[in-house]
Image 1 (tube, rainbow, N blue to C red):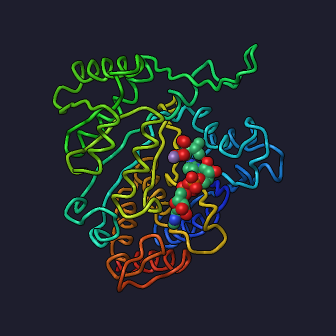
Image 2 (spheres, rainbow, N blue to C red):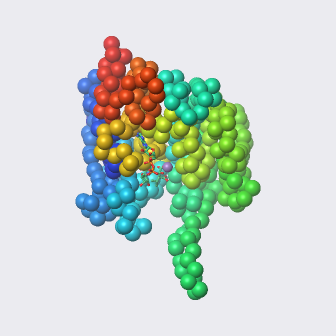
Image 3 (tube, helix red, strand yellow):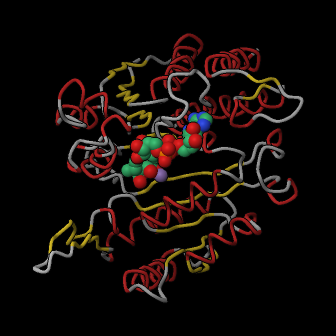
Length: 369
Ligand code: NAD
Ligand code: IPM
Ligand code: MN
């Protein structure tokens, strides 16, 4: 069988620690399934700055194009706070999204039964929760022009960022959201601030238009982003698929992660456009960052990274059974009482990153017998 080419980019902070655990799962798949991986590891973020003086090399972007998918850890390191804004480690992920055209960031927030008590919200609010946030990732205020910091004649400085969305950018991400909804509970809630921002007004119009033209069977609703933040905490189960812009999606998904118990639980898939050769560029990463406050201690939760690998199998390789197996193994290990520090609660067994990873792989062994 032709090997599957994966570019693996652990990055900074807890990135390499949790990627180690995802590698265990890759090794398990090679041993137990009819699949081989051609793995290429490379440096990004602060790790790349230290070695090459840039947060990401063009060569890495080329390797990403040449691979079947990218598995990404996290970037960012306070050590590099002094480098210029144009050299900061976070550029690595922003550039990968931009250069590969990865416009649709799928961020599922699913509550495992065993973790209903890990959320800061009451169990009856979060039990059974299964939502999907579709976040636009190559447009909006992250990339709009003009941008920068300028000094006026009187010495006043101005920091400028601009929210820009074109019809095409809104349309393509809306389609992804509607397509996903059809495979789920068939409901999409589109989130913007059309009461304040013209870009939000256009967003609402275009999403409605895409719906009316091609997805009439899907139930569409609209919500202002501030209300949405409140509703996610008040009654998160009212939602199925949420579709929103770059910045709101970033905030709302970190918020949604706490419904599941921890930021360390949430995986993501970022998908681009299908190319002429039929391939679709895609990157898989936890939604959390490099967690500098716990890096190097072996205590980070590897589940977001492992579930990101499951999403890779699901969306890039059509290995549904294997993705299901990983998710079931995670559920069972949590049910058995193992907890990393971030999801720890009374009466449970506290373990580190590696023990959690090993336990998940061992559970995969058991499940397949
Ligand atoms: P963060 O997501 O790194 O951490 C926020 C909090 O969540 C911290 O207390 C951290 O310990 C905890 N946490 C995160 N992941 C965890 C895990 N797997 N297990 C247990 N606890 C976990 O956010 P931050 O501290 O605001 O940012 C740190 C750096 O990461 C910054 O440089 C930021 O720019 C970067 N960042 C990168 C990405 C990415 O690579 N995609 C995402 C978010 C933030
Ligand atoms: C994320 C991160 C990134 C973002 C940063 C590190 C650029 O917060 O992936 O959620 O804002 O998109
Ligand atoms: Mn974020």
